[in-house]
Image 1 (cartoon, rainbow, N blue to C red):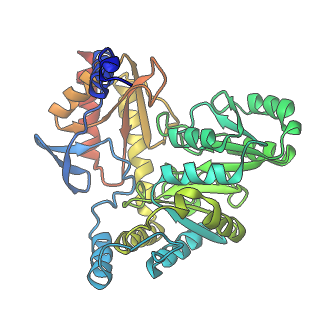
Image 2 (cartoon, one colour):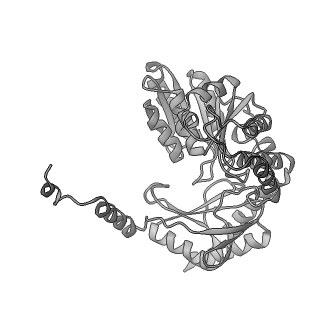
Image 3 (spheres, rainbow, N blue to C red):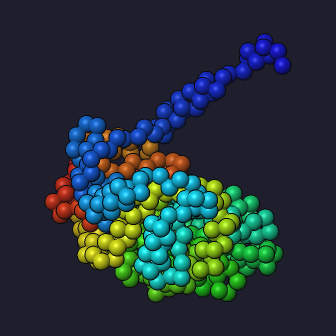
Length: 398
């Protein structure tokens, strides 16, 4: 190829600048907010102190000194790095102790940890199903589930959100023509705050010889018996084949896990590519995660406070005439605005008043579904909740 033949072709940066300009015009360009020191629900931003109603730190453990102490102690003894992948030289006693802690918390045979919830889903789903198989997925599943389904190369059938009747019709039509079938759903949906109809899904899985795959990231630690999540909340604990959870939400650190049978763990340890080919988490991180799980187990008042705070905020918003999605005690409180430009402006106005609230736009939500995503935690006080409700009422009215 001669040098002159490329002159009419834009360079990489030219193409990317045009794409970014298009995003900016549609009010869809993201700019990370810098959040520094965290103390309970109070954080330091680049401009001021603020009350954080945007994080997933549901139990208020992200700044708990016991997690810091656990990590510091292991760091002083073992350093920071794990040294390699778990299957080479990175398998540390802290990893195995954490997995034993998780399995005990969920009364499961075994657990396996991953670097993130995203890594878990894009590694596990393709390990379980492939070209000869079918996946039946909720329309509002998290992006990591969507990508895991795509990577599996299985045929993906998407059913209407939380619609078990639509799922049944798909199973009737397609199940007999494939080798394996996997029903994939979130437990608590991260942008809507509602729950999957898990009892119906488990029943359909039994009837149609399918497996169930539950991403319970926004439920574990918060709902169900002892914080065991969505299945526990509907008396189906132990009835789901594969359950995913994260350490970066209720448990206050980072990373993720899958729990289920010992056979499932052994299989994924060998076949989940995002586990096999990733450097193991640092031992201090694993120690902090273990502390977070223990605190969640031993301090049930945190779950009680999350629920009470959610009920309080939702009631005050209703009193102010603000419509929200989800059931009356859901800790994710979405307020649909629809227009992306307006939701960004509202988020900025709230930040100016000292409140951080998620301003969520496509592609995180469907077109026309831009919304404020408010989250409550055990760290919020009644005064902070009332102040936010009043600020929302004022900003939404302008």
